[in-house]
Length: 123
Image (tube, rainbow, N blue to C red; front, side):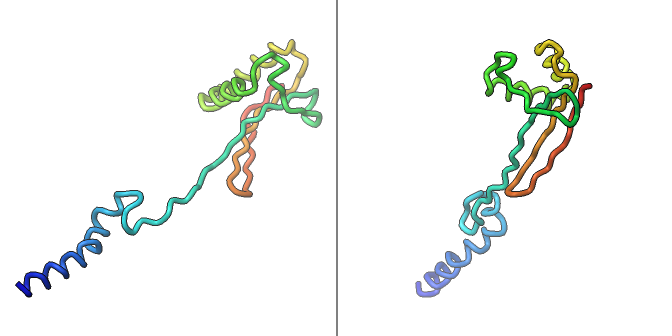
């Protein structure tokens, strides 16, 4: 009986270290898992309009009477379907061709690192 209890003790002591290699890494919050790290990439899609490349202002959705959050979804849809120039042409026609220069930019940032990419320019 003494031998059986001793073996049972060592087996139960060793099981977590054996399973740590095989099963626990599959569980996000397993016995020896590291804490979850938040590595999110925030992005903002901005549209600029103006009379020239040097005189640009951020386009406001209220000029065409669209809610700001709806306009954000529209910008994302056109950006991810790679139809940015089409969106700029639509905005140009909705504003009555007041602005001869349009620009769409994607600004991605994580912590303090910023990355700006000009996606489409309409002149």
